[in-house]
Image 1 (cartoon, rainbow, N blue to C red):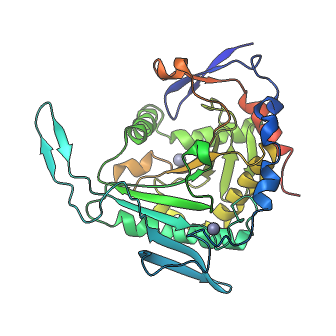
Image 2 (cartoon, rainbow, N blue to C red):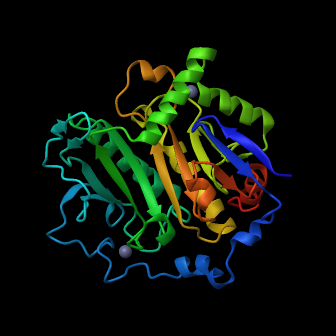
Length: 335
Ligand SMILES: [Zn+2]
Ligand SMILES: [Zn+2]
């Protein structure tokens, strides 16, 4: 039976039509059946890949590196093809009808691992801890830039997710403004707090822990859940149990690496190396917002394409019930 559900964090209505595409196997395309093997059989090093260890260049503008066994473990570089200019100042030129601001911004690339065939899905947890440490270190640095108002850490994995280079990598933006979708989440959490005097995300976690139908992984510090009104199939939130407005406050990087690698492992096998984005939803600067904003990572898989109804006014259509998505992911837990 079709059903509408409201996503309280994004304020979106989602139209679930499970009869249209009930079986998770419908998302697999026959021609792509070997995507898992194709990834795992990649060479450890690719001589043409600018991100593989051994291919470092003098022209790389390196921001930081973290050492590991045999050399660097994670490197952060200025993005060669940055969409914004870090040397500018975000001067505003506003009139009533025309608002312009100089294109200041920080745009870095984070090389997740020295190997070409090592993604979060198959990465040893200790290497993922190093990656999370690099995220946090650079996140703090970018937040502290006086011209930066909002920082986003994200990953575009695969062509459909907007990825370009194959070598597993992440990106970080320091923006002189807060994007609209983040403002919506902030507003939603504030509205809820005004009425209920509680954090919306903390209350959602309580409900999910009680219902136990959509949780795909948990450890002492984090919970991964396919939300009650997920906007797209398998969409997963990774949420800290402790209430904080910002990733800046996160000290549980080992637990974060544990849940990241587990969630990526499940989806890698359940969805056969899917194209995905993950996005950090976190406030860089906050005072009173710290009472009601709760930071989290959102993982979005590109299993279905958006159609006219989504663009018609932001009504999301999801053929897969979150409970079914969660139980499919759980079949592929790490042994
Ligand atoms: Zn590479
Ligand atoms: Zn909270």
